[in-house]
Image (cartoon, rainbow, N blue to C red; front, side, top):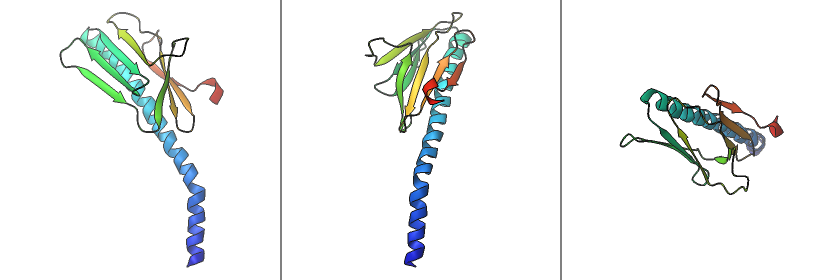
Length: 145
């Protein structure tokens, strides 16, 4: 019985790190998809409702917030545990950026920004708004390829 318990303990110890990395990978994929959907929703709302939309990307609070001039309209996306907003591109050259604000105007071009996410294992993904099409796309920074 002791041998069986020891073998099961060894197997669990060997499998636990890969399961943790797998969960972090799933969280990162989910978070990047959520950020892309959130930004796409902001662009679509600006165009469909013909009203300006403000998006605040807060690095310190680890969330994105969308506002409009429509009374009572606010949407918020908080990053899941283990995922953090690391930077917004293009960012402050002095590195002191705590939040980025962008204004989406109906009929105007979309700002070319990127939201860089990082997980607890140091893996990074960037969700970029394409200024030509207005659609978000997910990229892996070159250092990780």
